[in-house]
Length: 370
Image (cartoon, rainbow, N blue to C red; front, top):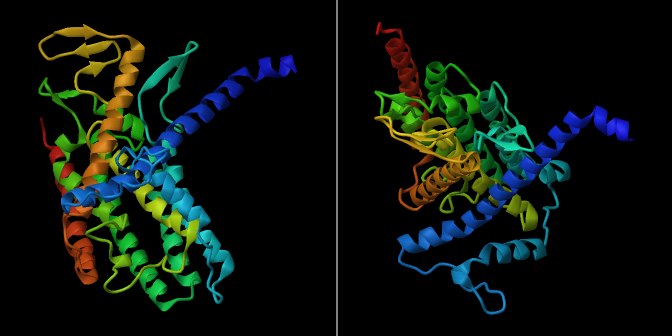
């Protein structure tokens, strides 16, 4: 047995470190997503001059509603798990998994830091470093469409099917635009690996300006954020669950099946926030912070410990994720809902041509003689 461990030491160490990264990173994402369900209602309450949820308490301590996500989870578990009599039982059961699991799997390629030294080993702060990570994100995110269409069709409800058809059309349309908005970044950084793209953003333009994606592609960032909100089916593009028109593809779901659909939506908020931070705002990069510490324009230096540098990088990524998550919640409660024909027109007649134009301009600028 000792010989087995010695012979497979590197494999076992790699497996153990990967398991730790999955547990820590995915645990942090799940915890933050649960808090987002509270933040959603708190942001709406703040913007509408209300208090929001503040009654859930433990031993009389409510902490302004901090325990509300736990109360919601207990309520969902205890509710009746209803299934329509005419429903396609297998696909009705699988639909929430198709909605939630692909979104969770995408966090495997999110770089939440550079690296950290553990027992003399260089541990990359990314669960799976794929050379084509951006294509992996686009491909796997498309699987969420199956959760939407199966949820509506398997319910055997006309209103649920209408919501599913809307959702499928909306997600397919915005998926095309979403991919095209990122072509310019791949052209500039010469890579589709998310970690490589973040490291490329660690340079400086003109000696002082961080070489973040938003500096190179500000127009693409606006298009990306618009398309990402629409694909996430969030307001003002929440047409698949328009209460005044239809109920939505999940109208026949209850208990934890409904919770899976709802949780998937909030997981996607975190995912969009991380992608925006990673692709356009330097990811874990901190301006002028390098492996050995700060190096400011002009030559001033501030040496720092390796572990402090790693902690600052992870903290910067977390702060950017929190900011964009808050921004997406604010947009949800600020703008009025589009009509479905307006959304389709926006995707195919405005966002798509503008994304193609952005690629053309980016290529032309890159070919200009310096």
